[in-house]
Amino acid sequence: MRNEKVMEPLISLDHVTYRYPFTGRDAVTDISIDVKPGEAVLVTGVSGCGKTTLIRLINGLAPGYYGGKVTGSIRVAGIPNASRTLPEIAADCGTLFQDPENQFFALNVEDELAFAEEWRGTPREGIRRKIEDAVKRFGIGRVLSSSIHELSEGEKQKVGLSSITMTDPKALIFDEPTANLDPESTEALASEIIRLKKEGKAILVVDHRLYWLAGAVDRVIVMEDGRMAEEGDFSILTPELCRRYGLRSAAVPDVRETLPRNEEASGRPVLAADAVTFAYKGKPPVFDDATFGIHPGITAVIGHNGAGKTTLARLLTGLAKPVKGGFLLGGKRADAKTLLASVSIVLQNADHQLHMKTVLGEVMSSLAAAGRPAEREDALPLLSLFHLESLAERHPQSLSGGQKQRLVIALAFAKDPDVIILDEPTSGLDGVNMRRIARALESMAKEGKAVLVITHDLELLKLCCERRLTLPIRNEVLARAA
Image (cartoon, rainbow, N blue to C red; front, top):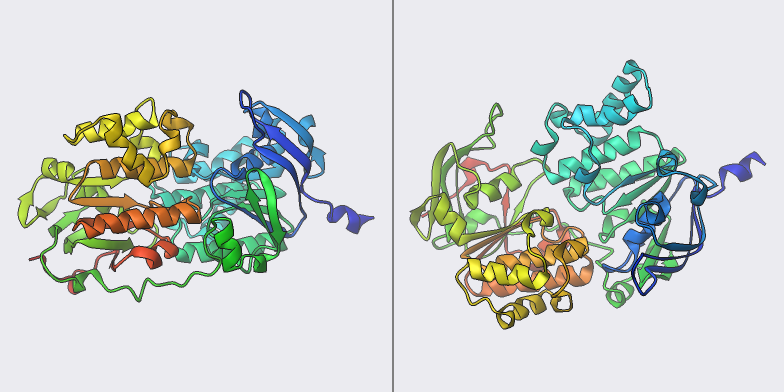
């Protein structure tokens, strides 16, 4: 009897159908999934297929927070969700959301890690041991005393992972957990999933990126239009199946070292850094006498989490000012105002760049700000380029994460900049939209624009990037910008 009890599913959905309030169709239909102790299951599918709704059903947010109507049975740790409160469900099922910043409570990393344990009444010494273990497991010792707001998106992801696993839930849900992680951290996360399985955890991973889970998950579920379309082990993710469902590739080569180095580019750069030094207050320099050029075409900025990639983007756009040195645009000295007018940036968090009442209004506003024609007919081609035309009258904050990402890229294109910088533009995007973004960047590069892509996405690197700028920058290997 004891062995049978151990093998009962820790996550169980039995013929579950769910509809959000005030909508005319089901978000998911007839979903049946079991995840047992020591098992990891991957759920994938194009944006809008129902993956996020599935997460909300398991952790109780649907219908507990979002309302709506559920039929079928949902159980976590053998107990029906319908009989429990959200905190009770969360004690058994920890969720790492796509944007971990939304689930932080403290301002400091160490305080954030301690928060849940303090709330549960764990003795101080026990909290200290758990934090030490999390630091070792996720390599976050360097940022332990940092403010949450000083962290890179990848570092926030690691802190979120640490805080969730520290509470020792029986089941874990990871929502796009590698979206902002460098390849090395992604590989480490796969090893962590294997370790958690050995501890008897039940793990559900919802992700567009597939390759990193090849040896970590036991089953794969492909969703389409709110239904389970395919199910099997990892081997079902053949190139033909991935194309059929618009998925990313299940096997991705690491081309980082084979891409030509940025300093090997010839000709005068569009934008150049001239002996730039920058440091945050009380911190060692992020850049020290750095000199390099950004040339026409697509340049990938790569480096580990926290290497300074986002800081570089802010410097190049005039959003941050160097302590020493400066920038040249078209060979001429450029101040912050000039950089802001000539360089577009797409931030990792799309919400920070959306302010209007409609998607169409966002694009028209960006066209007007750039001094370009800004009527409806001027905005629609940009929406069409990113497959957003059917969403023209929607409120931007009602869009999915992937739709928001495509929209803010469209806004950057509206500016028609000399240089466009995109910070992780394909995190959280399915295969179809990742390739759509790659084609759009290639079209801009063909116009002679300089496209700078800050990315950990190995698939995007292979698809469209022409050269690499690796951080941290080593001055001894840099070519002086002409």
